[in-house]
Amino acid sequence: MRRKLPSLVLAVLVALATAGVATAANGGFTPVEPASPNAHHIQHAYYLVLGFTAAIFVLVETLLVVFVVKYRSRGRARAVEGAQVLGHTRLELIWTAIPVVILAIIAGFVFYELPNIDSAPAAADPIHITVEGHQYYWQFDYPNHARSIGTLHVPAGAVVDLKVVSPDVIHSWWIPALGGKLQAIPGRINHTWFKADTGSYDGQCAELCGVFHASMRATVRAESQQAYQHYLTSWRGTIGKQIWNGVCATCHGNLGQGGYGIAIANNSLLTQKSGLEGILRNGFTGPGGAMPPVGETWTQEEIDALAAYVKKHIYKSAPVGATSGG
Ligand code: HEC
Ligand SMILES: [Cu+2]
Image: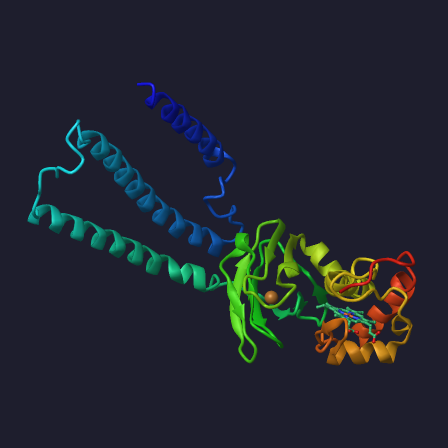
């Protein structure tokens, strides 16, 4: 009895600690709350699999504990073997058949849900947006040639068709609340879609694409039709800032004070548009590391907007003697 008490206390404590996790919002066990029909259908499949695995887990663990107790040694000498059991045809058939049935149900259900995950609602007249994965940012092109970096603006409730591409390496587009992952592969065009409820949904590149993969976040903002239209007409006013924050700051720091990329706040290239354009379009490697051709697909207008922004807001903005990168 003296030896059982500590293990019992430990078991209860472990049970209490994990119960908290299990009942916390979402518990970390289930996907984020879906906000698009395809994400809803993915979640249905998830819950079906979770149901079976949870039931099997409980069954196996219960039997394990029951058997440990029931067939304990009861003072039998260590070297003496317990009763030997040889085969049980009926039991073996059952535990072969049941998994086959379970797998067939799961496969059948997934095939049943797939069309709803794969294809957008037929009647809709979708908005076509191109999603371009870059080292290390997401760029969005809208029907009227508007563009945004990092944040995708869409009207809530509209069916949005996404054309997912990449000019450099493989990335993976993933906003969990709005559906599954889709790879952005150089030389290929992939399609996915969503129909988002009003709100803001975060995601992250889901394919290791280089040192700053972790900074490759994306937000989808599903807003009113007016707010969406407003972005389409006003994007030029913010694109310089969007590029700085979404692209350059990842490596050079918010104020150009340096990080992975060198400190550039005092770099006179920030005031020379053509020189700046050269390194943005072609990238370059120096003693301070490699800068990818982050601006290879930017229009002249965007380069101009960025050049104006850095000249005004970044050049000489960081404190003198701020850390230089390495
Ligand atoms: C993936 C990281 C990364 C990103 C993103 C990035 N840079 Fe760089 N950048 C570097 C590195 C590394 C260097 C230093 C290379 C060297 O000189 O050794 C550099 C150097 C520079 C220089 C100095 C060039 C010189 O010759 O003195 C400027 C100016 C610059 N970057 C501007 C930008 C701007 C503007 C952006 C955003 C459009 C940007 N960078 C985005 C990594 C990056
Ligand atoms: Cu990526």
